[in-house]
Every structure is written in structure tokens, then in C-alpha cells.
Length: 152
Image 1 (cartoon, rainbow, N blue to C red):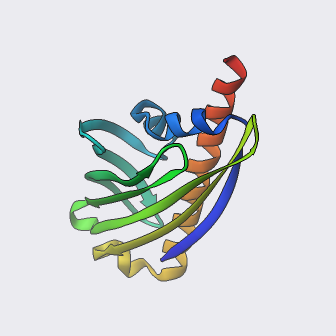
Image 2: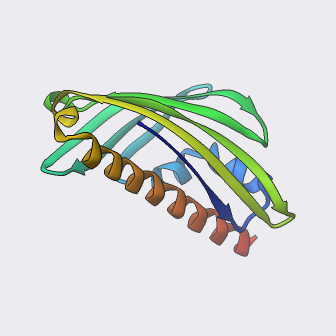
Image 3: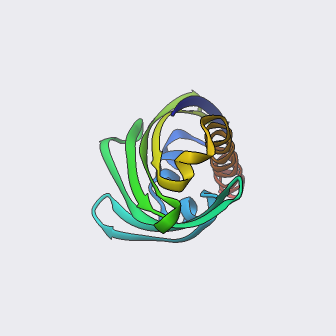
């Protein structure tokens, strides 16, 4: 499954970049995120609970940042297991573009794969849920970073 979109964030590009690398901000914005901890340079572990149709699962996994190009973007990759619910893996290329001194456009291209019980739910349900979760993350991220920009 693939999706791409962009989100306007009312904050300077450097501030958006810093937030994209801040585990506390990411944890706050990832829907269902219970735990997000830094385990090494450019590596984190996460525990996320989410529901797709009738299946609710807790996923534990690893997140890696690569192709870092501060403050322009990076690639974020992750994979996790949800026990009997199955597995998920994928990544996103995130690119930041300054619209003005105080507004940044965050572009993202997501590629994800799932298997197990989740994969049996059907592509339409999976795609709509993934699109919803990505939209929630980026909307929440824009709100959190935009609010921090107003305070600064």
C-alpha cells in the first residue's frame, strides 16, 4: 500500500525538523502510541495499539531513521509484530519545504506492507485505516509543532 500527501505546518523548517527528531513529540502524535524510546543513534523502539475493523492489536517494533538531510528530510522505516494479528512493516520519505520563514510544507510518501490476520481484512479497509492513521499523525504533528512555534 502506498500513499502520499503534504501538510502545511505553521512553524519554521528548523523547528519542524527538530520536532521530527524528538521522540516526545513523535510519541504524542502517533495514534495509539504507548511507548517510544530512543535505543541508539537514529533508532527507536515503539509500542502502538490500534484497531483495524474488528481486530485490535498491540504492535511492538523498531523504528530507524536514515538518509538524513537536515533540515530537509529523511527516511523513516519500521517493522513490528502484533502477535496473532500479524505484522506490519514500511517506511516513509519525509521532505520539508519552506513556504515562508514561518510556514513549512511537510511532504510524505508512505509505503507499507502487512501480513497475518490483518491482511485478511481486505485491502479497502486496510488502505482507509492506514490513510486515516497517517492523516491523524500529520494533523496532530502540525498542531503540536504549530503550537510550539506560537509559544516561541
